[in-house]
Length: 244
Ligand SMILES: NC(=O)c1ccc[n+]([C@@H]2O[C@H](COP(=O)([O-])OP(=O)(O)OC[C@H]3O[C@@H](n4cnc5c(N)ncnc54)[C@H](OP(=O)(O)O)[C@@H]3O)[C@@H](O)[C@H]2O)c1
Image 1 (cartoon, rainbow, N blue to C red):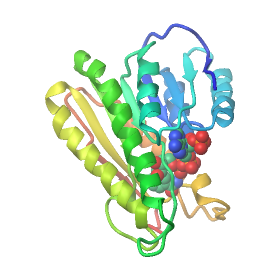
Image 2 (image 1 turned 60 degrees about the vertical axis):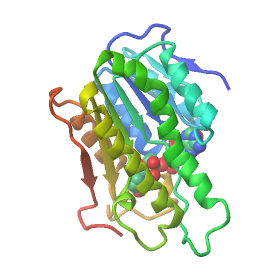
Image 3 (image 1 turned 180 degrees about the vertical axis):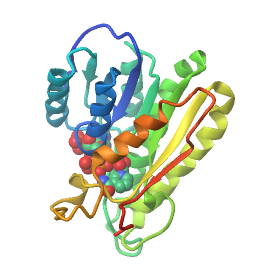
Image 4 (image 1 turned 60 degrees about the horizontal axis):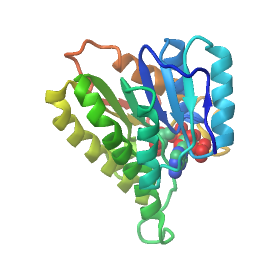
């Protein structure tokens, strides 16, 4: 699968967003483009990714938007995404958002459920971050957001391998935060409760019971705008009526 790009040169501030084709990732792409950031977008399926990218290019013609699909559950592809981004920019912000939600229970979920969710929800972030971090560290600035979950904070019914993978992602995020303190790079763990995206299938949200993807995007954007000496370490955001 090829790439799509609105321009060949990238100046200004740059943000890398994984899982940007839809849901929370798409809302993140939208808010950063609206504020003049150049975007480097990825997801697994090229067709949806390019459709989203075309929409954003039309809406925000003044920013540079590059997109390329990678299957981030595969180590080599996660590293390749990082290398591809570094070909044309050093990220100011990296948002590890790509993820899969497969509900289940440890005792009876299908064989391979844990491996798949660990690969997509944890290893993707680990390998992409490792690929771009050395260049960010040379600049002594930058911000990494890891989209964890309420399921990173406590166990719940039907959490199973998903919750285990999100606890692990939070562990990665917290360790990275400590490591990056002296390097001028901020790390924020984001813990959304239920957000109305494809992950919720045909859930009827006509009563506005669960959050909108733009709610998460607004909080991430706000956290990215503080002075260099301030780091929001955790964002916990739930539906007003609490978890489902
Ligand atoms: N929605 C919620 O209630 C909720 C709550 C807490 C946390 N979260 C977390 O927020 C993040 C986004 O969730 P969402 O609800 O917006 O999900 P979504 O609508 O299902 O979108 C998931 C995104 O991740 C991408 N992705 C999935 N597997 C991938 C892979 N192997 N390689 C590359 N990209 C991959 C998808 O790409 P394709 O389009 O190509 O498949 C898509 O762009 C996830 O990490 C999720 O765990 C969601």
